Each structure stands twice: as structure tokens, then as C-alpha cells.
Length: 178
Image 1 (tube, rainbow, N blue to C red):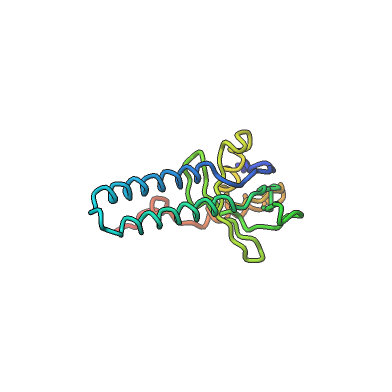
Image 2 (image 1 turned 120 degrees about the vertical axis):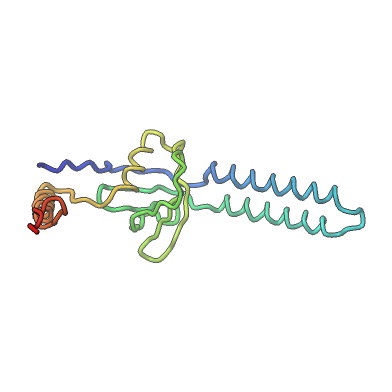
């Protein structure tokens, strides 16, 4: 039996400020604003705590907007064997460990990218950023590392055949006579 290798083709995928994350943050903030407004309305006129809640709400908005604005923007590159990150800061690119998928919602992936210098980025990859390359990205981040040359493929096939020959299956061993 010949092994057929299907791996993701080389591609470049844009990553950056996520609309999905922006919508999640906005929805969360609007929910918190509604709860704070209800609290303000339900509390006594002399109660100062709803003012503190409003101040916290404004600080949260500023932190969320700043974080979203400062999200790294760049390109994730897969050449068939190695991952690279290219951005304004890393103009010549930096090598990455294979991305880790932390959340998959089918149209967006939350990825953890680790470079060899120890920097860690958590970025959303969205289907809308490059619909033509979306399935290539999904294949590459979910695929196990496989040999890419025919020689490696034949060696893997031999090793799997030898391993299958040494595995004892309970139904393949003849029963012992009593």
C-alpha cells in the first residue's frame, strides 16, 4: 500500500486586527454598559458607586480600544516545512514554532505564535482576510508534520509495515486449548 501525502501548499496569510475580536469586545462592553446603566437607574440618587462603575466602564473601553489598535499586523508564511512571521517590526521575517490553535470557530482561528526568541503572539486568523487561502491555512495548522520527500515516505511506509507486523491484536492470536 502506497502512502499518499496531502499537505498544505505554501502560502502567505494576512493576520492583524480582528473584526471578530472587535465585535466580541464591543458586545461585551455594551453588555457591561447596559448593566451599569441599569445599576445607575436602580440605585439611590445619593449613591456614589454607580459613578465608580461608569469610570471603570470608560477605563475598560480605553484599554480594549488600545489593545485592539496595537494588535500585531503582519503575514504568516508557510513554505511547506517551516513557519515564518513577517511584519513591520520583523521585516526580514522570523522563524516560528508551529502555530497552536487555541480556539476554532470555523470562520476564525485563535492562534498562538511563538518565535525562537521567546516572543508570543495571540492572533486571530479570519476567513474574510483571505478566503482563497483559508483552507490552506486550516490544513497547515491542523496537519501533523509528515515527510515531504518520496524517500522519507518510503522509509515511513516500511516502518509502519514493520510496526504493524509486531503489534499483537487479541483477535489475531489463536485461542489456547484448555
